[in-house]
Image (cartoon, rainbow over all chains, first blue to last red; front, side, top):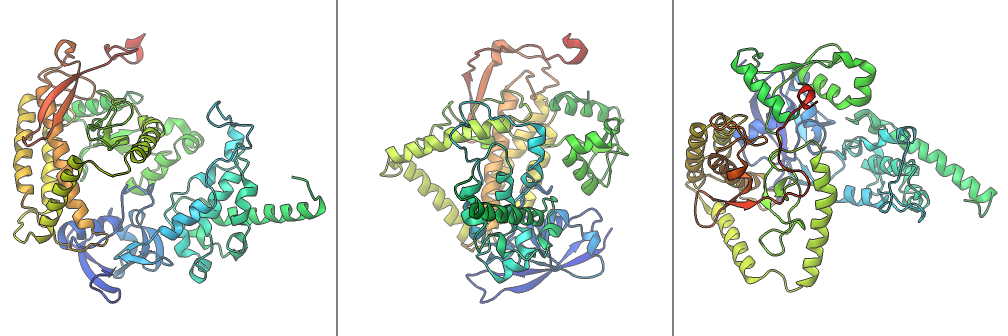
Length: 246
Length: 303
């Protein structure tokens, strides 16, 4: 097959460019190529100065999230054959500062992940190191879906609220908090509530549902956030109706 | 065979390919892995990722059709030599995971060893590195400093080099082909010598590689150049060590020396780059605690 396809890629090199601009590349079309294959073709054969993140090429590392024709996608999961009719436009993920070319600055996202204390918090009675911390398959089922997040940040690029307010903790971090809150071995819900149930937390979410639509792992962060809203509301009422009760 | 260890599966594939019983595809020959008998429920429960990957990338739903599979390079079993505390020979440098060789893999890595590497040795490396940094607040010793400056000078030279004639993609492809052809699933004296020879030439050609990106911001061109240099070193260490190991052990299978030879080779191979190139291969004794080497038998033969 000797057809070609055109990729229009946003370039930004902070040392020499005053603002980002598009650059076009013509790459061979293969029916089984994903956008990442085309980017690597550019890197190897046309222009080695193009920078983008990638690692696994199988939708598990979460590194190659980018805007493809305006939609947040994993470049390794978006096939050229699905974009046959036009030039394919490739841009860095929305709602993140651009570090260079398709590479975004992830620091804010990393801070948000850390802010929800994404680890088991024990109550002092269940030392996690001394003995096995057992869990039944049913208890695992309660949160397993929320463990599948690969931190690809597509949900942040899709979420309209993330575009309006960069302090919003956002879908992936709130889903991660929910994952630990639902874990039978964890006792950290109250500690996470400071961040999760704050103004920048779940109440910022307007339930547009875009996060769950773009999630490549069907984690459904929108559901996690709505469930958290319910439990946070119940906690609020409990605290007022039954002061002192846990 | 479907439940056999992966090196045995790869060897079986090699034999089937020689007999002309594999299936041609644009990405190399494949065989079919049939998991249809497990049924949709069990596949969804136990192998959801396999189903998703097969569906997305091979256009095959394993519930209804067999999955095309072939052996690929998956994991480097050796690595930077460390002791049980993850310390390397360079004071202050600790290594864990695929880059390291704490020797839990031996001659053949078991599936999920990476979890042990991560949870046990990753934790040790982190703690030990922190303790070292605390105990040595003045920073690196003069020897380390000199080594670091030499590496930096090499990087600076890349940035000013104008007359490079080699590309990363070209050299990398040649390296892949050399190691795959000569030091792959089955090896022989001839195949290994040829690969060593090719890698030596590639190492020389690497000195002429051209860096195109002179930026100091997220320069992935530079990273690829540096990674290629490291890959060539690893490839040559593998091929040179394999050429000297005239036996078969674990995943190192030689057609010209099919038996394990504990008298001469119950040892770790250590490839060292000093000024000498190619690397010098020496040996270190194996500490055996509980499980001495034995014949590998599976299934009915083990009963």
